[in-house]
Image 1 (cartoon, helix red, strand yellow):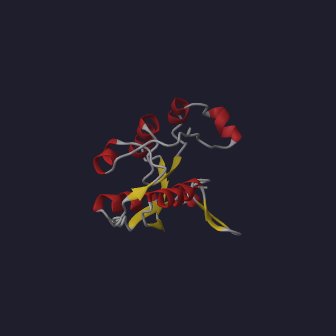
Image 2 (spheres, rainbow, N blue to C red; image 1 turned 90 degrees about the horizontal axis):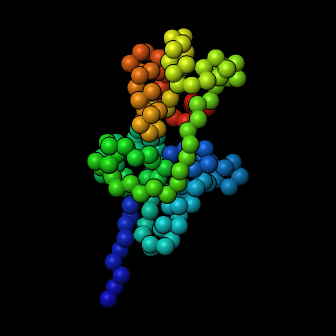
Image 3 (cartoon, helix red, strand yellow; image 1 turned 60 degrees about the vertical axis):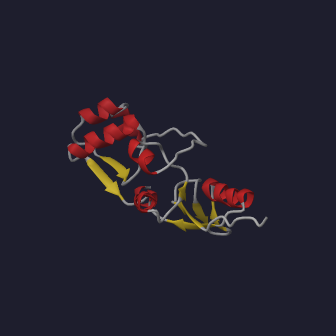
Length: 153
């Protein structure tokens, strides 16, 4: 009996820290790239990788253009269009200048200072607590959004 073809499937990556990045010497690298390479090797499926923003990836997942992605946080909206299987855990941290951190050591202290604004990457999901904070900052006009991680950094 002949083996059935598997794929091609479109597997989307997005630049984010050590999950996916372009190494100047060796080219594309990162945990997510390695995961897709190994998935293709073990399954025999053809995976065509593309690099997109998080917003575009989820739009393309909804439309069936992209079939796989990695490093996604679970949210109710994402559960509607994808099966999510945890394979890594992370811990988010808010980065700020030292003098500002002394003035606003908590989310509540940050929110209490109307002069402070929050920078976020459009389309990211951070989990219930941070997503609610981002939404409060947005509703107060205190959220600055950027299109990708590199612009935020």
